Length: 126
Image (cartoon, rainbow, N blue to C red; front, side):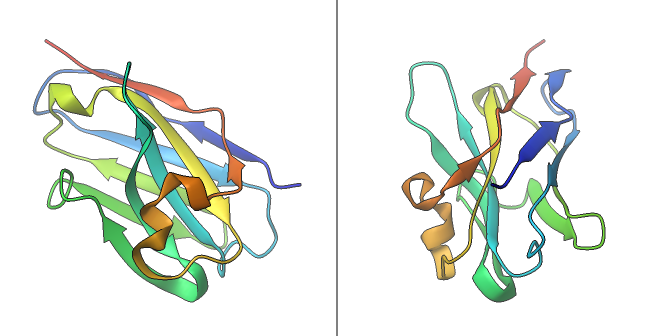
């Protein structure tokens, strides 16, 4: 059983920055697909950024390209999401998720992910 724990969410003003972290328990962290997904109130869950299996990627949703950066620390089994130039439309619950096998941009599709964290709320508001 894989456990994922997100942290780093909070309230930030438009134009501000936040860094999310996701601590993972899986021993094959460096080879699996992992990513960040978000769900705003009343909207469907969407992919934000991810690494595909065997170190592919990263891949980004068009809405966050140039503003968000995903990274991973294999030694700490931790996934990060640096979010800059935040906008009110970025307000959502952000989830970390993983699946052993997902190749290419398929890792951006939430339906393909098997294990999920409980999420962390990001609110962008003045």
